[in-house]
Length: 146
Ligand code: CMP
Image 1 (cartoon, rainbow, N blue to C red):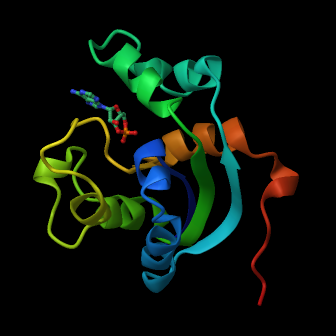
Image 2: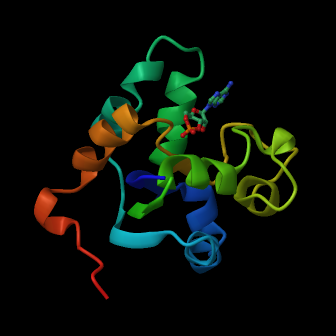
Image 3: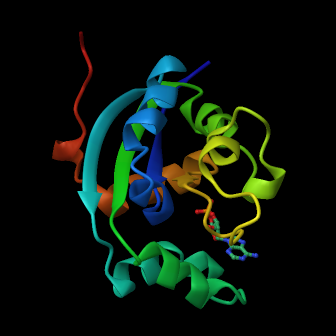
């Protein structure tokens, strides 16, 4: 299996719940290494651009409002099969469908707004290749050599 990097974001709902550390612990226990991280308040322009692929969807404005409602924690995760592994740790997109033990099952309100799903993760290698440089320069990615 290949060593991959993936873009992960802890969304404003989970940051507000103060569970950044618990979510990081899930990544680390699964063998993923954090190679870059920062907290940021997204601007409307940044959120709109990041989710541009959804611009024709009816939930687009709601998504931008949500993603700019408070700071997000953004990180690059590295490890074997990191993209699929992170998606597995996150669980299904909507908290009500998320598998038991997944981040979304454990840190979201299943009866709440279905878009408020705690985390984002790149869904494919091509997406990761676009999403990582959206937030981090090459110099900000740290080699984990020990
Ligand atoms: P994410 O994995 O970040 O990718 C796109 C996001 O759009 C998704 O998580 C949800 O936060 C949001 N989203 C997707 N579908 C809907 C929907 N039907 N209603 C509201 N938000 C949605």
